[in-house]
Length: 183
Image: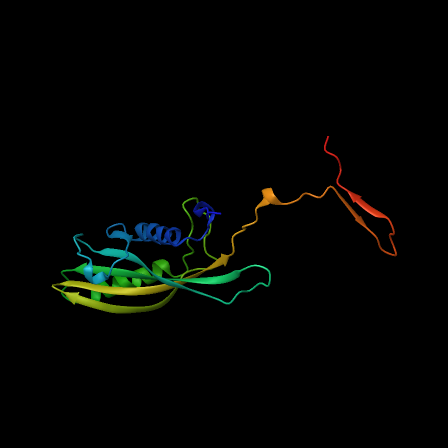
């Protein structure tokens, strides 16, 4: 049975796209996109700067159920902030704080506005990455939790439908339960 990705409610790409949309609202003058490469390989062409959303991995809790897989999944993201031609790095640090404020408490939603995580984004760390030829690069990391629940793999077409059940006990020696006939 193939997994129907349209039914998965907390895909990595959905969370990234939601973060990108939020940053686009908060930072209209910046280039904003998802990012899968090393920040050192990114060449900044935008005159003001760039915010790049990088997925850094997930961690999973122990199973929280005895009959199916139910876990808490913690997504980890880093927002890479790249700006150039700064006399000092104070301006980029102000922008780093602005990113922190824009995403702290943000709860990712899908394109239809449905929540896709079980809590709000929490900052976990920020760091200076590098400065090269006047381009300053900083990163700020966030985590956000979602559920990881086993998908239903039941083949309902192969199940046997019972029309009648007969049970015997001391209290009910001839109990018969019959499915009502459809009209």
